[in-house]
Image 1: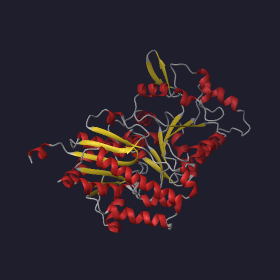
Image 2 (image 1 turned 90 degrees about the vertical axis):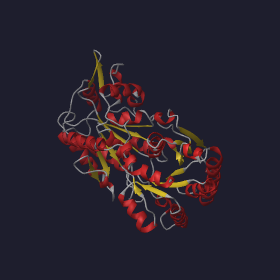
Image 3 (image 1 turned 45 degrees about the horizontal axis):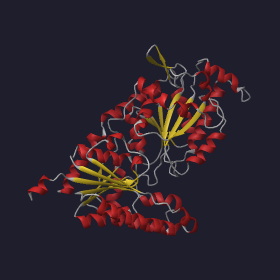
Image 4 (image 1 turned 120 degrees about the horizontal axis):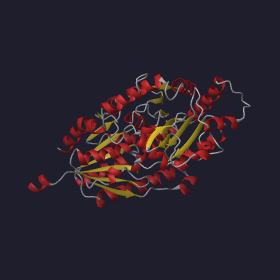
Length: 471
């Protein structure tokens, strides 16, 4: 008995997906190790590297499973491919959770995906005498419904599976009050709301950090996605002491007076984010600025490029959109971007190291979220990270987004591409010095991000449940 009492408690964090693209589960792991004093085993698919703080933490042990790809079978039968994939993943999860990691006191599993994760973890928790907590990020059946339709029999089976095994858990977290209500009223599940908050390494970047980051990203930023654009034309006069945003003079780093406004968005390139809205808004901004400045459609771009290189400032800045993320629709939208004829707007798509992503957010002037939620009950983690860096956000409007985005305090909402274009015009007029609304939202976002960090939220709402479940 004494040995059991002295044994350090252990948690297993289960993600049937890329752990590098699951920031909330990474933060859970860090908190379990540092705030609960537990040993932590992460069982997840490989792919993107998790944050350096996880990789260097001696109490966190990462066990990578292989992703299951059945592209050949899916061409013959989509339903057969889903069934076969779930069976293989179930066996793989049982193997890892039973034999590849030490016995944990508690499993914490990300949902979705629900199939086969919830069943596999429930079976293993019973076999190994451990407890089982589900962290509800969204509802898996609603995501499946985007591609198959809610009335599809596969979606109905998925819904039954998710509800049945979700109710078997010993505890639950969820991301919004709206989701908590849905789980309580219609699923019979009592969940603790654990809001997403950014950890401490999300913060506004200093001028030096911005300079060093854009030096590292130099080629990715300066190279146009298609033909030359308003960012790539500066490459001819660039030197090692100059980036697209900053210049280094006599050892000091300074903003370039005619720098572009940097707009950040992060996406999984999936159907629950309509990226065409952003492309249309960018095109509208480009055309409206040209009309406001009295430029003709037939105007030679060469003169504009000369003005940009010479440092001329305009009432409305160039916009550089940097879109980060991986996903199935990325190539489709990249092809659409290449076909756009834009004078004052440029796009770059990239995937960043986990240490550089917070720095890029902290270097930006505005964030854009296109997330609309398949269930209408979850909130976009990207917006939380943006607020952590003091970055105001223009977010697509949906049912519970106002739990996070406070209009005219830390951001704005839009429903159409025209509304987003209007917001871009309003926020960036007079940039960088005379844009009072943008500066006000920036202060509000900074206040939101600094008011509570993940560690505080986790200690207040998650730690008591973990202790209660372990008993």
